[in-house]
Length: 166
Length: 269
Image 1: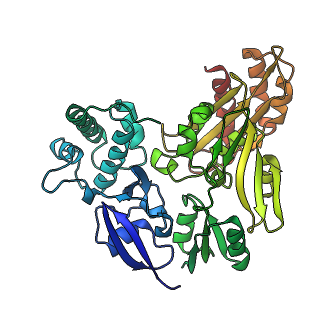
Image 2: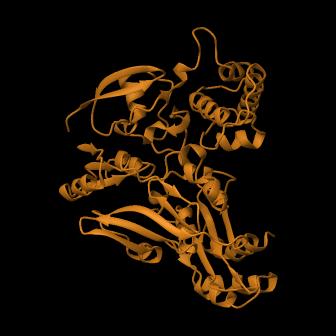
Image 3: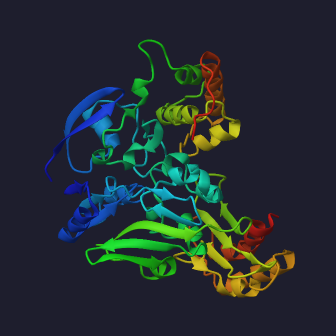
């Protein structure tokens, strides 16, 4: 039952902390690193509010023991903005009223970021599928899908990209 | 409470960890193991991660396909030579889940989860397992009937690539995405000189584990693949399907819609 020292690369920074065996990435982010954007909704991988990125891919951080991150870069919502400049996804969510209580928002934005990295020009159906692991009880999803498509268009305009090579 | 989580560098170390601690369990993607552990009453005191064992290789160039048990569903779906499985994988959970969930883990699910296991049954897959006694191969049907000891690890699944046009899959769900099965159908109906030979039909949601629809298979062997033969086969699924009642659907409902979804799977109705 002894704690071990774990080092994670989170939002580009090396972070070191002490934790019990099998501490989830979610608990490490929230309790050890004070990165509270990722939420604990179900602890089962059913709600998506804990979604973060590992190597650019969306994962349920409530299901990942920290010992299995293996040094891969972790991204949370806190790492999205550049200083005072919001990421286009954040801006689009605010402008499009795609966030009400905000509980699903972190997970939604990161799931969207993972989508746009792999597929910079998604269809509406692509977006719906990408966020199919994220539950929202407030918005009815449409505003969220619209915001993601708006952000995608803005990102494409700023730096046009082809779909990432498989 | 977890005492420890082991991250062995070799399968020998992993097997030692499993043998040494009677309450140790294997963790791959963690999508079923972590909820169990966090529920608090699992009896699991230690986890042995497969993450460093390089069990995620996919060999799919030829006709014999070999997929490491720790290959994620996302990696399999993205593999250029495994396009025939993309539809099935897309029906499992969400993209986020599929970045963690593994093909090996899917084998241990109880229905109505475990759609890859349904596919692997229809593909007559073979599992490679390793224990302190050595490596051996188990046919999937035997695995589904008896499972394996807690000190044994599945390291790979292998199967022959189905001929073009012989693979059919359909999963009936309550929602369009991220939903367990009402019923799942995976069928391998290869033609030999225009007639079906060695039909294999696997069903999900029709028993605790995936089942082969043997009566329907027998009716199809030697027949042409057309609406008539498929309708006949659809009527025989009930001989082998034992659907259950749960939150998604009643046994009555599953039995009622099974032949309909079977026809839709094969004929695309």
